[in-house]
Length: 230
Image 1 (cartoon, rainbow, N blue to C red):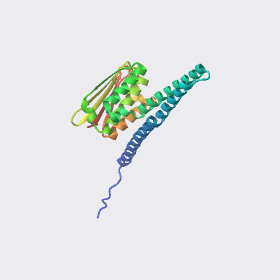
Image 2: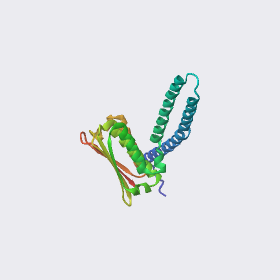
Image 3: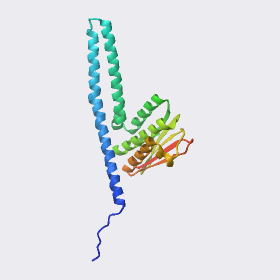
Image 4: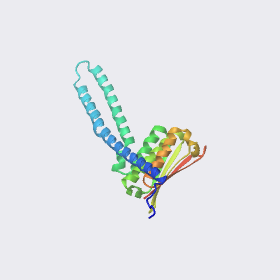
C-alpha cells in the first residue's frame, strides 16, 4: 500500500509563526487593558487622595501660614500634573471610551488630543454602524489608526489628516490620508520606527483576516487603506 502520510510543507512553519504572532498581539492587548485599569483605578485615585490631604493641611496651617501654603500649593500642582500624566498613559494604553462608548468616540478623542498637542488639522468621517462591529475588530481598527496617526505626527510633517470609516454588508474599510511629504513604501526599511509601525499594522489586520495597503510617494502625502471582514 502506498504511503499516504501528509508531508509537511514550507507553508506550515509560516502559518505557525503567524499564529504565534497573532497570539502575542492578543496577549499584548489584554496586558494593555490590565495596566490601563490599574493606572486609572489605583494610581490615579491614590494621587487624588494625596491632593485632598494636602488641601486639608493647607486649611489647617497655623505656623508660617503663607510659606506653608506656598509649599503645599506647589506640591498640589505636582500631584495634579502626575494625575494628568497617568490619565494620558491610560488613554494611550487602552482608552476607556473604546470599551464603554465605541470606536468612533475613541478615535474622536484621540484625534482631539493629537490636534491639541501638534496643531494638526484632523477630520473624522464614520458611519454609525461602525460601532456595531465586535470588540476585536474595533480594537484592531483603533490600533491601526493609532499607529498610522503616530507616523503622520512624527514623520510626515503634515498639516492635515483625515480618517474615514465605511461599512458594507461584508467588509469594513478605513482610510487614513495626510498631506505630508510622503515616502516610498518599498524603501521604508531604512526608517526603523516607521518600518516596525507598518509591519505592526499589517499584522493586526491579518489577525482578523484583513489587509492593509500603503499608497504614497515622496512629496505626495500618504494613504493607509485598511479592509477587514465585517
